[in-house]
Length: 290
Image 1 (cartoon, one colour):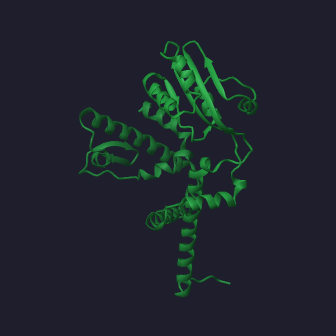
Image 2 (spheres, helix red, strand yellow):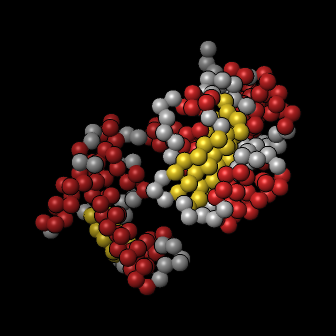
Image 3 (tube, rainbow, N blue to C red):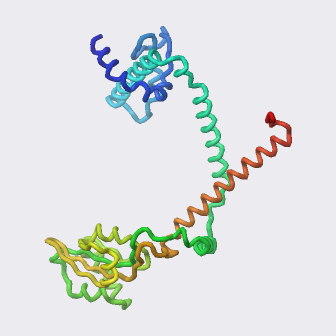
């Protein structure tokens, strides 16, 4: 009994935080037909209630542990809930308005989600993306430096390093093919998609470049060769854009696609709300006292 009292007081300080979440554990009087797992004052937890919540994949010791943990959590929640009820005023415990508001919000959200899933056009053409980009350049100012780059990381004892030094700088198709084959065989890490923009900070996570002025470093370096105790690093900066300049369309394409979809979603919901309101108004189902 002393142990139960200590649990009671340990958790009593959490009463206000757990009151709402504890509401799912409703009080139940003892039922003679069910096997009782736990009791807190005059509230009882029955085995069949716990079994209903148990995942089907659990068996043996795992199912026993689930039942025990569920019962322990239920006891704690009930103790806190009952303690809170004793220490709150009737006005503080009157949550009818909050619960009704929460229920209404959940129902509305579920309906809007179903509406969006059924009717939202998610296809966004390249022409729409380009038009939005050109119309809203002020929204696409770079917050970070970005680069087009290829880089290779190899161990110091990697073969054909002299050839690697030629290939990573070359624009020849044959050399690029040789570089790609080499990277797949010997590189610890590499990136060869020079058509994609990357954050310069992401490159710094992979390559031990040390600089206090990132913008000047990008302006003054094209081919970079570095070494540490274990690896050699080769970097070819194919292009860059400094922060606060206009972000390129290719870097913003997916961002714009999501913006357009979200705008369509908001429009769809707003149109639905307007349609429902006007229909109810025309049918005389809406009255506002003036």
